[in-house]
Amino acid sequence: MDHPRAFSEDSRRIAAIFATLGALAWSNVVRNQQFREALSTRDTIGQAKGILIERYDLDDQTAFNTLIKLSQSMNTPLRDVARRVIEGATRR
Image (tube, rainbow, N blue to C red; front, top):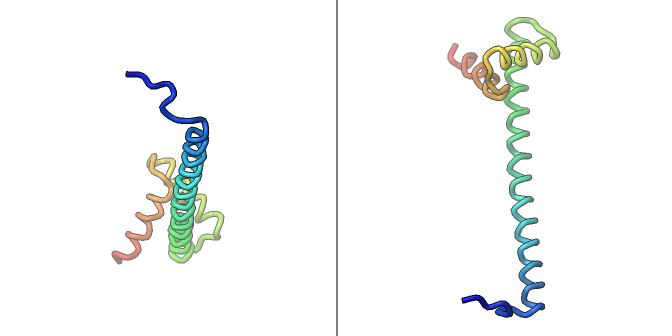
């Protein structure tokens, strides 16, 4: 059964407002999660660069470029390469 007038115009407007607020809240949750992941990734890459700088006497840019080249040659995300560098350093 179809009820074309099941909700009043005011009810539809209120529902639309709540739907919009819900979408905005969810968008903020997602954005916050992405921001936290980006900060974590940045820290991980920074630690890996520090390890390469110390171990191989590289400058900051060369260490970063090395991580990028490894990432590309291994077809692996940069954050994962950085984690592997850190894990390798902590095993020693």
